[in-house]
Length: 229
Length: 229
DNA sequence: AATGATATCTAACACGCGTTAGGCAGTCAA
DNA sequence: TTGACTGCCTAACGCGTGTTAGATATCATT
Image 1 (tube, rainbow over the protein chains, first blue to last red):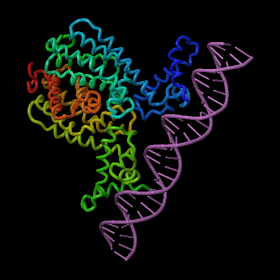
Image 2: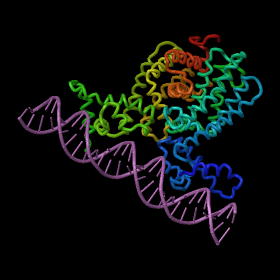
Image 3: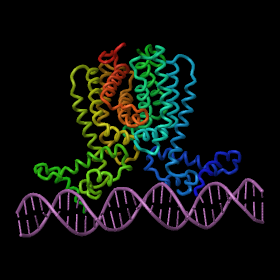
Image 4: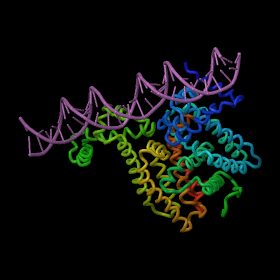
């Protein structure tokens, strides 16, 4: 009845014939849906909202996605795709574990700063107990976390990181601090008229997080960004 | 038309005659609505859901609250009421600034651990840009934050805290770490089968946060909970 | 030129929602 | 006893939602 799978196949393989420029509607939908879901949540965003922003009617959306749930999952999946790519880019570093971690944090914050909507949506999704993205989160989150936890764990075995630190807790704290910073930036702008997203604030933020990590995790601070020790 | 104000007045003043035991329905509603809003969000919770849990019908709720919005705001307000009371209890400490801060953190975590639903709802509300609680948040959040920011600021002027720390950023990080811990506990339980809310984990968490604060904020660590320095 | 697929449209459906109207039993003060 | 009031009920309204059905225009392929 629904021709969704065919549509998707046509889009995937259709890159050979880019003559139809309407073919990237699917991507326009994803691009427009992300900030809407991020700001108003899954239930607070209607298909009619999304459709209006790209100039079509709601039922037309369902020619590109089989349902609202699947559209949302596609948005979420795209976020994880980006995060995974960024993680792989970051993982291939040289130098000591301490240097690599400092660089990874800076790169991660830079990446996140470019995708604040993604973080806001993630922030929302993580609090959702029985949300639509439940299964996707369960599938894609643990591998990402595990990479980082193992990194800390190995650093401890090799004598670079403090043994008092519980790697899993530490990583969760790092996530909370970072996602929290970007997930609440809009609220803080509203409440305090302070813009956490301008470049200067983000640079300072990088220094703060690195400083925190060096002081709490490192056995011997590398001194990269910790003045007046 | 609506007799809400009279109902409220009757309840408030009605404490003199506690013969009617049905009078505390309003409080039962609040108690039941909090975990529902915390888990499913404002839009995800219907008045019929709330009503069913206390054994009445949805329209009857509106004899105790003028609308769903006002019911939600009452729930949120109750959370802030509790936090403000806890904050005042914590503020009256003795000793050095460092000792008082360490004690305040432990007390705050203890308090929050007893109200994980409140933190989860707060976590949700903070990400909501144009949510129902917008005005309430704007009214009640800054004073609470300001107390803490000023505490850090004074500590810096008096030479107990590092000057490199930006008080506002630091407090936001502390909030993110703490709210994040409790706001995502359910998700972590689901993803990793790790229960962050059992007493042992919470005790460890207190030590971790205190350790982090001592190492990043204190000029001279007090040594209260920082072994193997 | 004919065919078939694609992307959009309009119309409409069933559902759940917050809310309103109006009724009824029990309680309390006069 | 009366009369007002409280706390709950049932019935129902209007609205917005996700989704379906079916028609139409566009365009590549045959």
